[in-house]
Length: 157
Length: 203
Image (cartoon, rainbow over all chains, first blue to last red):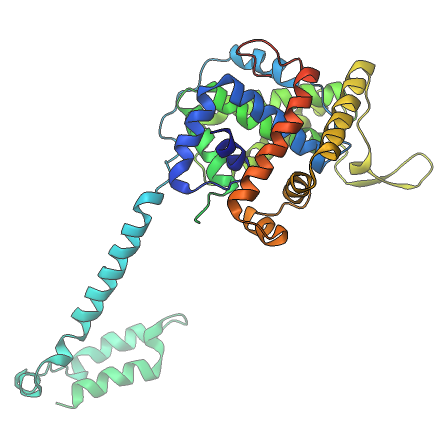
């Protein structure tokens, strides 16, 4: 088990194992003492001139013990990792369905499309509306081409 | 293998602390104490003051833990608390923080503040620190070659197990075992120095 805690320090643990390894670490005073010694060694090897009082943690733990215990369950959302593949699959399925639905009308026989009554738009009815919306710089309808396309669609039939 | 990140580990420990386990918070303090001391040593000169402010910053972080939602990394959040704690401390003393990494000393020479070792006012602290540093270095030197190489690549060069396995031409399981054995060997030499004797004594 200690070997797994050593690997935990290096983030060399699978996401599904992290909770169990942390449980083990929290369950044993000796493992926590090792965690302390291993981090001390890490800091000395990586940063040879960095020094601290050896009893810093002892003093800190005594002070922390006087603090009211913080209880704020679920403030931090637990890792959603086990649902990630499912969520990814679900979104792929959704996009697939969407694409299928969107392409469905073009798959209909041509005569079905021909039987459908075209929507008639009389340009005279909508022109004041379009004119009003052409004003303004940031208006997408102000684009001549955009309005033109709609007129053509209406006048074809 | 899909692996966790530093953020995953910190968030797991925060989650436990938010559920009332103070030991989980202590494990985070063990992990970050030296990084915070190093940070604050750029603003405060006296070693005792640095450690007092570090302790205060961690207590403030503990009290604020319910507000930590995990939007940022734990260290980023802690960093801001530590900087603010130091600024408040210095302002109550009417002192200005040394914020730049470089400044001019009395002779007008440019000095890198980060390279300065904090002042030690207690000779005992200095002595025990020297002992710790020399004990760790001697322990590393005494390791069998393959253990020393593995732990050095990990702790000094920050390599992942995958990278070390490639560098040392061995399976990842061997890397994991070598690093663990190296840590055990170093820790066994540190144990008497830290006074880690007696049941349930953690630090």
